[in-house]
Length: 110
Image (tube, rainbow, N blue to C red; front, side, top):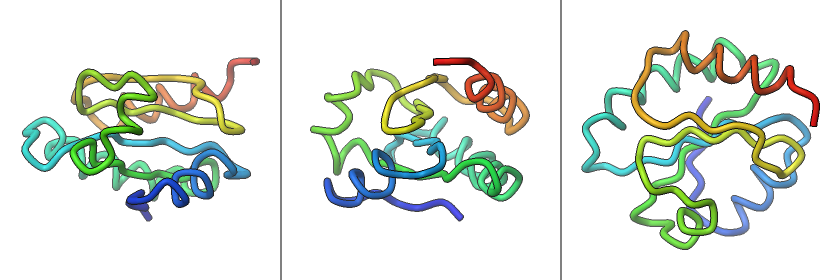
């Protein structure tokens, strides 16, 4: 299941304090590629539910968060582990591409 992050408290609890890695989809309603990516992100959340959580952040409603993490292009998928960014993929891609990105990012040692 994909969670929608709408508040700073939700960001803090669901992403930064999560005990499992979180893939965050930074998007906006007016963004065509973001709408194309949405089903792939949804499928990924089901396919990898035992390894990661998936969350969405609307950059129009959370501009402060988008600025804090340097989101300049959307869709941007950012992977967080133990509250820190461990990977970033920008632009539309198929589910398999995102899954490979997540698996490779999680296999790296930090």
